[in-house]
Every structure is written in C-alpha cells, then in structure tokens.
Length: 80
Image 1 (cartoon, rainbow, N blue to C red):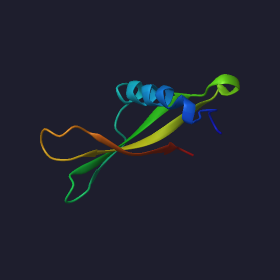
Image 2 (image 1 turned 180 degrees about the vertical axis):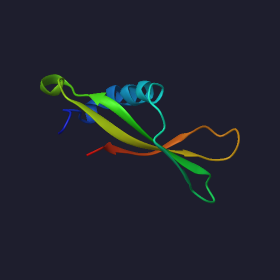
Image 3 (image 1 turned 90 degrees about the vertical axis):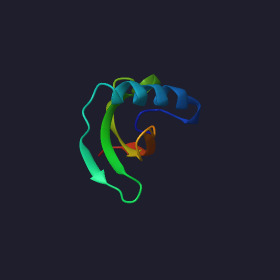
C-alpha cells in the first residue's frame, strides 16, 4: 500500500481526485473513436495514517463523449 488507502477510504480518495482535477492541467488529450476523446490528468494524492508524509501522483483517464455528456473516469492508478 503506497499511500495506506484501503477500500474503507474510498471517499477520501474520491475527494482527493475531485479536488485535484480542478487544480492541475490536463497532461494529454487522445482521440478515442467512436467514443469521443480521453483526457489524462495526474492528480496529487497524500497518504493516510503512517503514510501521510507521502504524496503520489495518481494518473486518471477521463472519457469525454458527445456534446452535453459529463466526463467519466475510465481508470486511475499510481503513476510510477
């Protein structure tokens, strides 16, 4: 456990990602036909408990479909 985040801490992780995506720039935009585009965003997430001094970037990929559709997170994983 890189950050000490477990299943019981999903709300913490969700909040960190939601806050982080508003504060950092999109790293890459890729075509994803026929589903629209994917946007890659690396979000800083701080660890919990004994790992609270650690900060790791979590790479998130967001799928953006047609006009009027909300972004949908396709995947998230710690960036090496």
